[in-house]
Amino acid sequence: MNLPLSPYYSAATAFEAGVDEAGRGCLAGPVYAAAVIFDKTITPELGLQLNDSKKLPEKQRYYLRELIEREAICFSTGIADHEEIDSINILNASFLAMHRALEKLDTHPEFLLIDGNRFKAWKNTHHCCIIKGDGLFYSIAAASILAKTYRDDFMLKVHKQYPEYHWDKNKGYPTLYHRQAIAEYGLSPLHRRSFKCGIEQLELDL
Image (tube, rainbow, N blue to C red; front, side):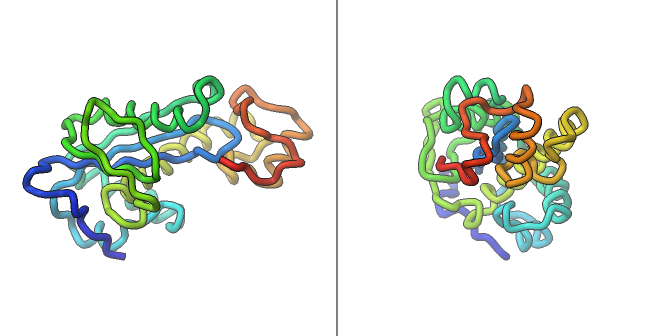
């Protein structure tokens, strides 16, 4: 898949960052966000493979992460943990994670491409929200891949502490097995108390 260059990326926009998050619908763990700034051209090896992280197999996501980090002008990740999610709600926690990722960029972006339909403005930087943008523009797709893989890394790490929830398989998402484990073992310290985690609710309406 060859995603186009953002139509907003012009001579007047020297540095444009794509921003996306991962883990919004999970029952446990933090929400991760990533921000990526590319030059106005990227190699065909990367450009032809970039896509929404959810549409890529795990092995390809990690391979692309290496390419993204090698080719990007700069990139960063930010998180909001489960306690912050419970305190300010998942939407605001997603914005917070995005802001934290942007704060860590080595280069200040002049324009932001945000995946989704809502965003809380950051440092008066102009932005555009794009529904399903991670399948439309390569900077958002790259941010989607980084957010997803770094969050998966975290869930694989904490799985060793709480193997009964099988986070190595479900990464904290509300699978039937995950809910059954919660019913049997109760909530772990990393579960989001503000979410409905019971076996009776098989889907979250976020």
